[in-house]
Length: 289
Image (cartoon, rainbow, N blue to C red; front, top):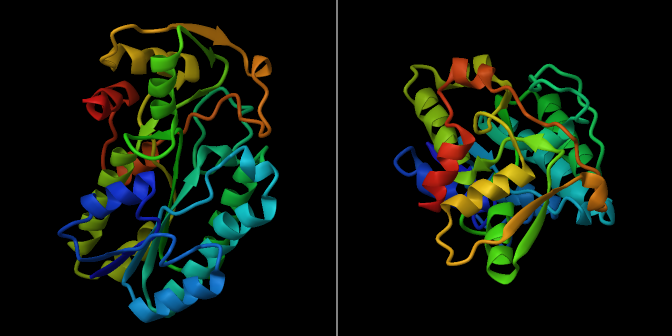
């Protein structure tokens, strides 16, 4: 099986290249080789490689910047996934694509399920929802995996930002009225690899993928706030002096992009279909080593 992975230098792409080893011929490409903003290049690369499976973690992820760059965010997050799916369909290939909790508006107070109505409240969320819909419209065998609050020990993410600020400041002010599930990039990659391994073991992989096509939620289990997440990060960190963490509201720290107040996702469908998922605080401890 020939597996094409996009965004190899990103948080999830980097982990995927490691997790997918042994499951096929892995071709992992960075932005210089396959730039999702260049739709012609996307088509040309897929036609040249002719993969059996395309895994697409590449995305425009600058949530606040997207508010002032809606066109490029929509091209990368909304249009490119549709192009990937169209080309995969022509090759009788399957697609795994990652989406976000930000497709929801945060008005619920219980975990969102896959069938809940979407209503994104920022440009990033709207662009990611457009990508979901573009993939579904092609009819290609696909898994759309919605995740949330992704972090890891590389790239730009909340964990690394907290560790940097903790070394510079005596006090950190963190939002305490937004709830979700911090999810380690390695959890996402390892879960994806487990799913691919299950499909590979089937007599008719194409039917297996078609029967399981759809949207699944893939996050760590449990939920927390940015304030509590920060406290947990500092508890695990080996710092000589740890700053005081103060809770604030989202109104106290206005950002260009509005965030959902509640974006916890129910992962029952994925866990009942494929495999279990770790609690967010256990995964954080493993990540911080």
